Amino acid sequence: MTTPQPPSPENFQRPAAQPGPDAAPAPGDPFIAGPAPVSAEGQVPPQNAVRGKAKPWLIAGVAGAVIGALVVGILWAASSFVGGAGDDDAAQDAAAACGVFERVPDDWKQETVTEENTYQLGGAIALAQAAGQRDQKYRALATQAQQVQQAVVTFDITRVNQLVVDVRNTCNDL
Image (cartoon, rainbow, N blue to C red; front, side, top):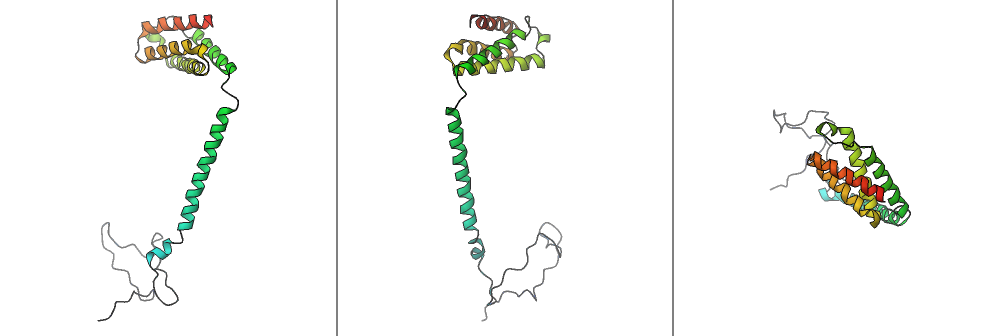
């Protein structure tokens, strides 16, 4: 009994094209790889021999991603300790939030809840909450702003009226 030999590139023939998804590719198809590489002895190397050359690249890619993530993490952590989050920032955020709350309508009705007014309230609420996170002095303002947000989301217009007045009073006391 003889052992079957792999076909040589010279006498390799493609099977006839079959219709359907399993059909053989057309001649000259750019997505079809050429014949398997052949060594000087005429033998086809095993599949894992080709893959073995990719391992160093894979390891280098993973190592690069890990090192990059560490650098980004270190820079991000360092930036949280440098500058920023001071009392002046909290005071400026609270003042900006109060300024926006002064500009929103005094009397809220269904027609008053427009896209522009909702965006203004959203900005004021975010600023008030940022101020409350940075400084305990502004926690009451942040809490009231959160209540305004809840009232707007639930479309409780009479509560929005009262809460905007409460926030303005808190702003006057700061």
